[in-house]
Structure formats: structure tokens, C-alpha cells
Length: 582
Image (cartoon, rainbow, N blue to C red):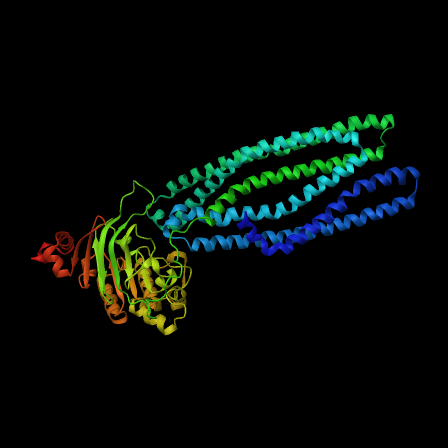
């Protein structure tokens, strides 16, 4: 809980004021039954109107104090609770931003979304209500017991019987409810996952007329959530009937025993009336505490899920004193070398297989290295090791002769431009999306990058030009337009190393040719890695790497591989025809 307390620490002042107002509220409320007993026992029986008015005025004043104190307590509790939740949510988001791809895969994006929203909201509500109940209920309980003992010690014995019964009942409910809330939160993850997947891929769903299938799938997860929620809630709602049963039983016992004492003259009516009020306060305090336990039970499930994120060990971290230059005060030049690299996604799984096996490859600064091979050959896995999106299992990847694990991550990635296989744009204008590559780029630089990526003409065709709004994920532009915007974004970065993962698959060959010419002109000193399926996209590269089942099947120029590499020749002939090699 130290980390949780750290997020609450900035609001210690608001929390302290909330506590002060709670104490004032409790004191003002706890004195009311005693004063009422004085009015009944001394004022009314003696017919002393002045005494009744004076004591009644004190009660009115205490009621006003209670109202003001209760309002201020709620205000400062809310301030502390909402601030705590905001800082916790930011802490979680910052932690997620430091995650590697593997860390994110371990949680899933839907689960992380639930943890940052639903789970944090539960923690917030618990913090707000908990601060009020956790202090108010025990204070009310202690003060009410003291006052009840003053009114009648004999009747107070009823509490000695009722309290253990109540505590045992609450303990049973809490112990059984805790695992149910954990299951419920996982069901929320599944519902969020279905919603996220469906909304993101709604065009595919409609294209394949799978609306009914998606409705059924969502219905299943939604029904599961409902069943799990009802199972937990049905147990929790038992808390109230149990509390009311014990409370009513106590009142009946007080009326029965106290009534006999009043008849016998050992207890006056005013004292018994005050005692009933105090026993109601005691039982209400116990009820609030039991409700708090139920609330904490549900929050504990969320707390554990939040803690999993906060305490996750990020497997890609900056080395202590990671170097930000190549040792000579210059930026990265762009020489990349793979030295006997092995890689598997599940590093700890004994049964998992290597995705890459014994890869050795060198790219000189300014070279264009193309990587080609069948689906699942390991092409994308290979280039993701350069910016440390993943780390090697064995061997090493070096940039300018230095292991990438020795670089400061931010510095390494600042010098690498990446256009991944899945092109992603963010909600915002086209210009804002392009400036992800360089937030300080001028309008002229943005336009120049767009022209180089063959995106300027279609951008200008939009009524708002570069101020055209892009919806989340870039759903309002075509696949080819999205690819060209992502290429422009990477070019605007002017990186030392550029990685293009099948980034021109959605553009025609003529446009692709013009983009390659722009690379030669704009990024002449940039080391470029191109993953492509089309031979026409790679045949002019300085070096072509043929991948097959995680291994290098051949390295050379287009002509060299045609003459010596059977896998490359088969790919070429399948696309160009056998007569092309004749």
C-alpha cells in the first residue's frame, strides 16, 4: 500500500480537513440524544419552558454545525479522492507508456483500458466513501457506546451479544464475495475487449455481414458479466437484511428489558429513549463498517489488478548511464549489425521455439537493405530488434558498433524512423499527425515530407488540406493514403535508420517508384531497411536478405540472388513469370 499512499500524499491537507470536519460532525450528532433526554426528563416533566428553549436552541445549533461539517467533510473528501484517482490514473498511464510490446501482450489492451478506467473509478469511490465511513463510523461507535453506558449499563449487555453475531456475518460475506468480484472484473475485461475489437474493425464486420455473429459474441460476454455480477451482488445484498435483523432484534430486546425497568422504576423513560437512540447509532455505525468492508472487498480486486500494472517489471529498460552518443559526441551514423541473433517471443517458455535463428547481417550507413520472404519467415521480428521493441534472446544487435541495449532508449529511437506493418494514425489533423515525426517541423518541412511520400496531392484535394481532421485509427482515409502519411511522418524525422515494414503494399508501383526516388534524394545518408512482398520493391536495394523460417537463406544483390539463390528465384518467377529469368 506504500505506492497507493504515495498517490494520496499530495492531498494530505484536504484529508486532514476532512477528518477535522468528520469529528465535529460526530460530536454534534452524538450530543443530540443526551440533550433530548434532558428536555424530556427535566424540561417537560418540570414544565420549565425556558430550559426547553435553551436546550432546544443548543440542539438546533449543533444540528447546523453538523450540516456544515458534513458538507465540508464531503467536499474535502471528494477533493482528496478525485485527486488521488487522477494521480493514480496518470501513474498507471505513465507505467503503461514504459511497457515493452511483450508487457502489453501479457495484459492485453482491453484489460489495460479497464484497469485505467473502471478499476481506478472503483478505487476513487472507495477512497471518497472510505475516508468518510472509516473515520466517522468508528468515532460514532466509540462515542455512542460511552454515552449508552452512561444511560444504562444493564441494557448495554445486549450489544455484547449482537456485535459478535454481526461481525461473524460480515466476515463470512466478505470472504465469499472477494473472489467473485475478481471474476466480475475479468468479465468486464472481456466485454471491453469485444467492444473495442468490434468498433475498431466495424468495416470488416459489415463487409463480411457478420453483425449477427458479433451480436451473439457480445451477448455471450455481456450475459457472463451479468451472471458474475449478480452472483457477487446477491451475496453482498445479504449484508443489509442481516444488519436489519440484528438491529431490530436489539431494539426489541431494549424495549422488552428496558420497559420492565421503567415499570420497576429503575430506569426513567428519558434515559431509555436516549439509550434507544444511542443503540441505533451503534448499530448504524456497525452497519456502515460492514458496508465499508464490502466496498473494500470489491475495491481489493481492483487494487490487485492495478498493483499488477504498477509492479510489473518492464523488460526493456535504459541501462545505468546509457550512452546517448557514439562516444565522439556525434549522432548515430546508422551502421547496424546482427551478430548471431536468436529470438523468441516467450523468453521464459521452455517449449517455445526460436522465431529467429543465428542471424548475422551488417548494414553500412546509407545502405538500402531489403528483406523478403514468405509469411512467418521472421522479417518483422528481425527489424523490431533494431529499435528495441523486443530484445534478443541470444547474440546481439549493434548500432555503430554498440549493443542497442547500451543506448538510452529515447536517444536510440529518436534516431530511428519506423513505419510498422500496421499503419496507425491518431485523431487530429493531418499536420498534427505528420508532426509526430518532428513536433518542431515548419509548415514547409511538413509539405516537403508529404511531397516526398507522394501524399501532398491527395492532402490538397481535401477541403481543409493539411488541417483535415483524421479520425482515430485513420478510418476516414484509404489504406494507400494512410501508408503514405505514415511514410511522410517517418521521413519528417530525418532518421539515421529508417525501417519500412511492408509500408507500400497498398500503393501502386508507379507511386512506389516515386517514393523510392524520394528516399534516394531526401535520405541519401539514411540506412534503410525495407520489408516487402513485391520483387519490384526490393530489386534496386544495395543488399537483399532472403528469409526462410527464421533463418537467412541468402544475401546479395538482385542479380546475384537470381543466379545463386533458389528461394529468391522462385519468388521472382512467381511474380514476374519464368520467362523473366530466361
